[in-house]
Image 1 (cartoon, rainbow over the protein chains, first blue to last red):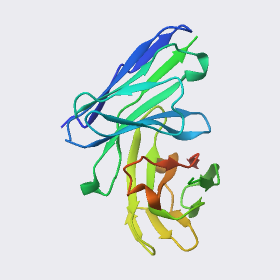
Image 2: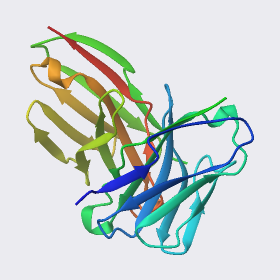
Image 3: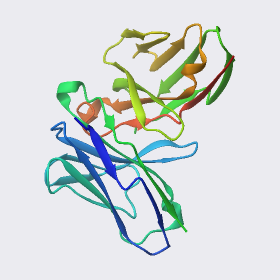
Length: 113
Length: 115
């Protein structure tokens, strides 16, 4: 099992450009999450999904959109990137049968210039 | 809204010493998680604490949960250099139905263990 994978691993964008980050999991988890990690801030929840076709806002959703068209995939979109979105983005998945323990992907390092 | 505070945020210690990282949270939390992160890497799950008085141990690390005090601790015994990492605690509000709505993380404790 690959667990949780993320694409791409690194990306540099110019202000105003758009991009999509892809997260995939092969553990058949219903629940998926996008977090961002900034120095000294811990991880903050952007959006999450409780199942295919459903999404919800987290703590810091502004400037991001998400979609969950397939159970195994969770996409994070930036429509018009801003320097404040420079961060490391982590995807995670979980299941109630595993005490909601979250399994994290390797992360995507995004720089917006 | 759940708030999670860790202290210290930075800790430098010598090999062989014992130390404790503290994790306080603001409202009743359903459960408490500890994660480890190495530089440039992802988060690795260490412990899941589900009830008051829960204690879990793995090697030189031991985690405990006191829900009445809203406090979890991560104790390091006879530290070794390989334990150098950033440690995060995270919780979920009691009303969130377990961890379905995601985790609230502390800012992390950057631990350096020197030979």
